Length: 546
Image 1 (cartoon, rainbow, N blue to C red):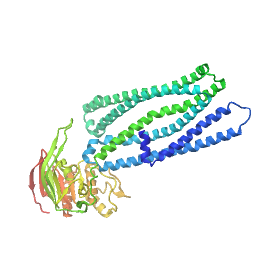
Image 2 (cartoon, one colour):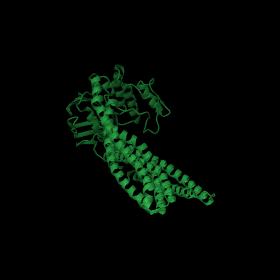
Image 3 (cartoon, rainbow, N blue to C red):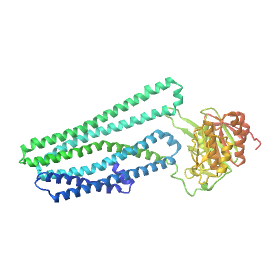
Image 4 (cartoon, rainbow, N blue to C red):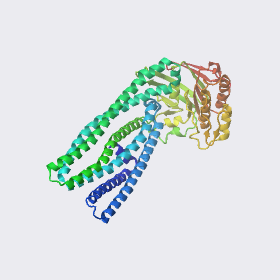
């Protein structure tokens, strides 16, 4: 069982102790039934021995049940904590291209769904173990009372279990189909959330997305879920009816087919009445355990995808690039990168690119939308890997053994750059320098750094880019790659950015590579590269006064 294997693997065999204690709880529960059933046959006087045994069984049941449920909660929370941390670690180690292919939706839904489903299923499973043990002991007790009744019950239960398993197979298929369709629903829903501004401006697009796609997918999901739930309900009712049939058979048929006494029939009937509830709980637990198994299956699939996409696993701890804090030149030699063709978009190739960036240069990259500027920046920063050609840092070739160290040389701010609430990765924050940067970026009245975090990161797009630049400057990297950082700034700050901030960064020895459309400020750059159809078509030198 995947659920049990998961708990055992993640928690150092703690689940074994849980199973043992659940077994003891079930045994104690069964003994309570036997004691009550025997004492109920004779009320003439108080049986102190039976009362003592009854009390001890109750005590054993309470202690073992409490332990098993508490350990289950601890085990599951520990297992999910370890698994979630492992997934989080693999996410940060995966390649950008792989992460874009997997998609945030799959990651969010997989991680969000797992914890509570697995927890509830584990609790039901542990509870079910004790109840199954109790059922076994109860049937042994029935065999002691009447072998005919025992074999009669076993035959009926065996037939019922076979039918139940066949039905559960169909239920599992339905659950898997519903889960796949639900994933499609969340992917489509993401278009509404991520593209909210666009659909708000276009009623026809909004209606089309909702009525012709989201609604159809949601309806299909609903129908699959209802169909599966109907099978679950039918299976549950089947078990309930089976018990009534079993009870009726004991009362009406057993006396006609064997020589059992009325007293024995009464005892067997009492036992069967007692086990109806526990068996119903076991039946209810099975669909939830199946859901948990499917959740863990999706979890394992995601983890395997991330593991296969780990671009840091070949990183060499003794790579020369690790100790390099600066450089003379970064060189791209015949570098190419091709986006794979998909049903949604055609293949697109950037390159071959031959380019040398010297230390301390300001290089602007210009070109129309779709010309390949951002892709070139992703190649330069080591987020996309060339499919041919080589990136060199001085005389060192950049490859999978040292990409992590190469990226340590570079800070990047993309058009949709994320702003962090803290200066993660900086052990001791120089707050004097930080406040100078906040002042330089004209954000003094917008945010500040208090008790280890920024007071406000919900800023305008232009202000968020300024804050992202502050965070990058605090990291003190050798190279700064800026993708349209000035695009959302007001005219005053845009001029200030080019004439003051970039020149100050250059005076401090920073190398700056910036994608821009601001031809008015080309004089700030040492060189301006023009891109068109994935190639550098022009390399103009400006040579301004530094």
